[in-house]
Image (cartoon, rainbow, N blue to C red; front, side, top):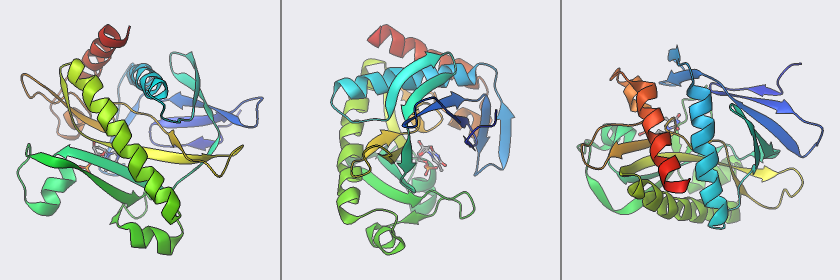
Length: 237
Ligand code: TMP
């Protein structure tokens, strides 16, 4: 059987239900738009477990998501969605491309979260865009954009608290959204939430506990992911 879709870190498979897909977490890691590649044993399981715990919390807090059920160590079932081709990034602390773009030093805490949008396109390298670009390109309606922004800020508030309780500072993260095929007028959170797409710093030591360990060759990449999972499990059971 062939997957319906294969991305850099996940595969999507059909199920018996036309409205549900099975999402597989791979052990592959990439950075810098796929230029840097590696495989980490156990990464798929760790990200699946982390993402499942986080999605459970978001669902309990009333955030609509694609999550249906966890299947096994590396698979979850999710609602089939038409992915909105806009990545939504929320930043609480200066890091990564924000610092490169602005010259601001890493670690500056923002007075208010920053929401930014980029086009989801490997060919273009996920360029930063604004609302007017998105409207002109037809990637989302004005109403959908409002929903993306509001949902992203709500998720940020929930995750800041969750990770704080785990002794982690939520620096920034990327979200994706989709229109469920069985309810295309609505928008749900889709994709994973894991240290692949979040920056998490230890609250006490400042140590990076996310994919920057791979991007910057800091070592102990899976040890950090395992620690994040351990703390989430201790917090959420
Ligand atoms: P950035 O500082 O490189 O723009 O990244 C901001 C956040 O978004 C960071 O937590 C990592 C995440 N991210 C992804 O999940 N996928 C991507 O392709 C990029 C560039 C960033």
